[in-house]
Length: 196
Image (tube, rainbow, N blue to C red; front, side):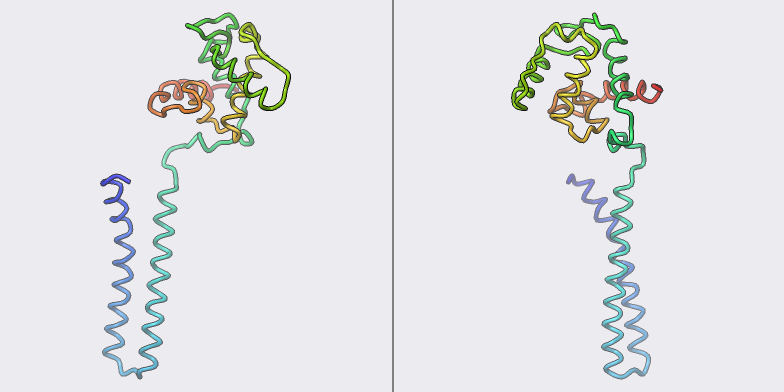
């Protein structure tokens, strides 16, 4: 937690303690001025503490809920059950090659611009799964096999099928950098939102 985040955290929780102190001070003043017996005074002190605790818990929950509430749409929270995985694949294909199976960019080939390293990784995953299937570099030009390789990689490194993770990982690998994949992510999301 950075210094600024810590200051913000303290500022949010400061109001909780101020409210508790105000309640406690008012009740304590009332107890000291009213002719109340010792047991009643003890009971009221206990109730004050309980009330203060309830205020603190309530305020803490409000602050935590506010911190968890996204202020912008968090696409990363959308899982494949709530979204259309095919729609994502179409968006990535559009950004990568505009659907051209013969597209080539450096060592990347096909509709999903699959690299030789990606083909090797798919074969390693399949081998670990005990499958005899093996992809070749030529398979990158085949639409169905390219999509199959995409899904093998996603199932291995993104089993929840989170949309944001899928996009960033396809661009930056399993250990992607959010900063370095931001532009690609935005391009795919723009297409994703318009795909029907």
